[in-house]
Image 1 (tube, rainbow, N blue to C red):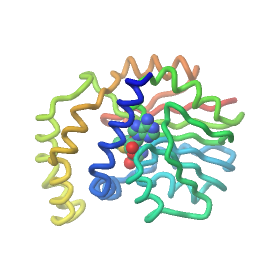
Image 2: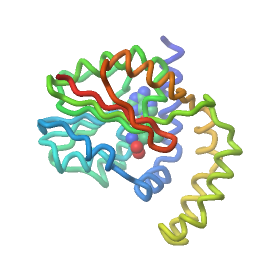
Image 3: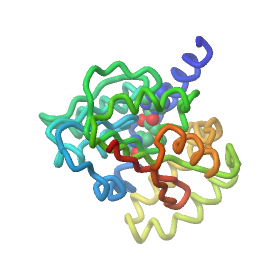
Image 4: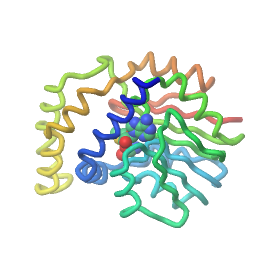
Length: 228
Ligand SMILES: C[S@@+](CC[C@H](N)C(=O)[O-])C[C@H]1O[C@@H](n2cnc3c(N)ncnc32)[C@H](O)[C@@H]1O
């Protein structure tokens, strides 16, 4: 118990260490269409777990009456509140493994966050309990056949993407993105990540959300389930 709490706090500190540059990279590369194409029928309340700097929460606030967005990182939440506040968004610092929310939601989303949870099979049922009847969960997370990909792969990938990124985002932005992707703090973070394989991902989510369906999107796997 104490050990996993320590691990979680340590992850949060990691995101705090590069929050501004993470927000820059996430803003530049943001793509919310997997989520916006899979919204729930009812659009009362939405929950974003691991909201980072609020990019997806801010988008969901255009569709939902209320959005609750939780994250561990105080610095990312500060950026979210400063750059992406809206009257119908509430940002809360909270551990996704110990959600203390006494409301239910029509949509629960999460992007690139659940691989940080030390015990995902235990966390998912608690998350599922927060869903309204007819509600929907839409999650996206990294998958990899290697639990922790080698750092050299990230370095090569960042260098390989630089020229295409220059044409997509311009030289200045692409250079800043490259600098972030090669920064020791980001590479150290990536070296501490533990990803599920596709098979493990399907087993864990399939057990908690029977009948869910999966979508492979590059190095991510999406999972969608409706509470009928
Ligand atoms: C890779 S970032 C993704 C952020 C955002 N969803 C996005 O797509 O840009 C992972 C996020 O998970 C958050 N996080 C890590 N462990 C968490 C936990 N136990 N509870 C809540 N948030 C957590 C981090 O602070 C970080 O914002």
